[in-house]
Image (cartoon, rainbow, N blue to C red; front, side, top):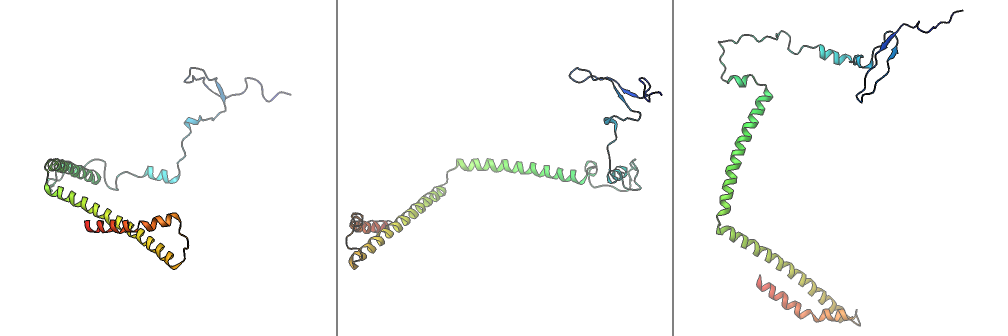
Length: 193
């Protein structure tokens, strides 16, 4: 009886020894007949990818060579613009507009700087007006707060008079004593307005 496998009887391919990037060596490997290394296996493409790769880039009937220019038709546009796509033309227009805007901005900036150098009495009047409006608003707010305190004092006085509060506390007595000062302060602020 003879063995099925004897050393040296296997017929196959070998992958040669290769050097790694770090300088070490890979051993020679024995592979079966028909083996294809992973790097050489074609990438799978589905039917849609294959269809679009096989599709011509030009429309049907159009050849890759440019037809001779028809001399009877004269273009009003320069040749550089006719050779550009719609997107390229649009981008050129945008660039031109940006340049114009930049030039306008420079003019506006220069004018603004000149305006800052010139002092106009109107602006000072407007600043004074704004300051007086702010001061008037603050005074109105203060008057409102003082009237609120005065109402609280009057309510406290009514409670004392009606007998709701028999013995006022020290704070309540102090609040009642401030009534005259509150009335005078309100009058002064109203006169200033």
